[in-house]
Image (cartoon, rainbow, N blue to C red):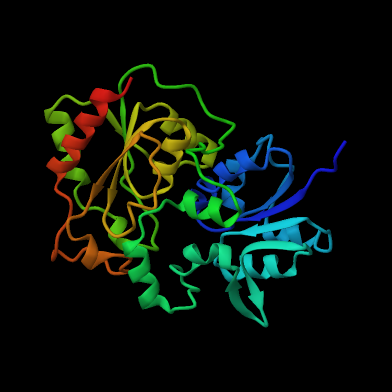
Amino acid sequence: MAKKRRTLIIKIGAAGDVLRTTPLLHKLSGDAVTWVTGRTALPLLAGNPRIARALTPGGFSRINGEKFDWVINFDESAAACRIASAARAPRKTGARLDRGKPVYCESSAPWFDMSLISRHGIPAADKLKYRARKSYQDYLFEACGFKFAGEEYFLPTAPAGALAPLVAVEKRAGPKWPLKHWPGYCNLTALFRKNHINFFILRQRKNLRDYISDIGRCTLLVSGDTLAMHLALALRKSAVAIFNCTSPWEIYGYGRLSKVVNPGLAGMFYSRRAFDGKGTHVAPQTVLRAVLKAAARTP
């Protein structure tokens, strides 16, 4: 019997980014995969039959010295690059450190050229990202020598599906991109009541499993470009996502995601400012139309 390839995947960042990296596991079915991620994302990987070990960076430090056949790091953070640099392997894909500075291999350059560690600088990186039209999975798979063909997210602990039409609304977003906090949710839910749409607001949960179960109750999710959107896609739910400042083209929708894009996206693209009452934002009526259209085609 051939020896299993020992592959190390490093994705420490936002939980949604961890989740959208899991389609790669479909191409690594024969590998013994070790995945390094942040503690909050560990529940997304727990019980995954394609992952031999899921570790935090601290956990990896205890096995540092093990030899791998392949290291894949699609994370630009300093912690991820340090691990990729320290890991022993003859093949490394993605970002790592070279004399203390982040670098990346040529096969991953189309992605990292648009990142915060871009060799072209951040202004040029943002321009490249705005012009890009491929999904994250396209870049990831191509960097690894594969072709993305719509492989699904890998979330093995999926809850049972919803029993009746029910819309889940996630108003919240993380602090990193203030413009993800769309100001129209209050008016949108008023429109839902007026149109007799059954909905509930997602709330803070003590653990990620309960949050996943909450999304599992719905038939359709409304949110920004957040973890909730990625979880809905992983759970095979229909979703409507509002893109105020991040790339809608980077998200692969699997035929289940309706994207509502801010008409002023060009002027707000990856801006760190908050909504100030000036400029444009998505109208609640536009989101309502997207929800009604998506609901009509949801089984």
